Amino acid sequence: MQEIVVNNVVVRQTHKQRAPIPDNDLTSQRELPGHHDRPSVISEYREFVQRHSGELPWNARPRT
Image (cartoon, rainbow, N blue to C red):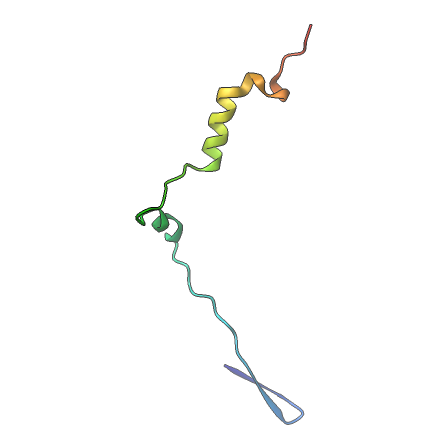
């Protein structure tokens, strides 16, 4: 705790500190019972593009 003195008035300055987040916190959530293990969004997107690549507008062939 710090003290700041302004015009003979002492003001205590407190800093709220966040609780430390362990590095493996996100992966430990998956180990909890009842937590569904969802694949990452990137892998889901990659699979979607592979399955539907011909239907996507930026991959569509021009009509002749």
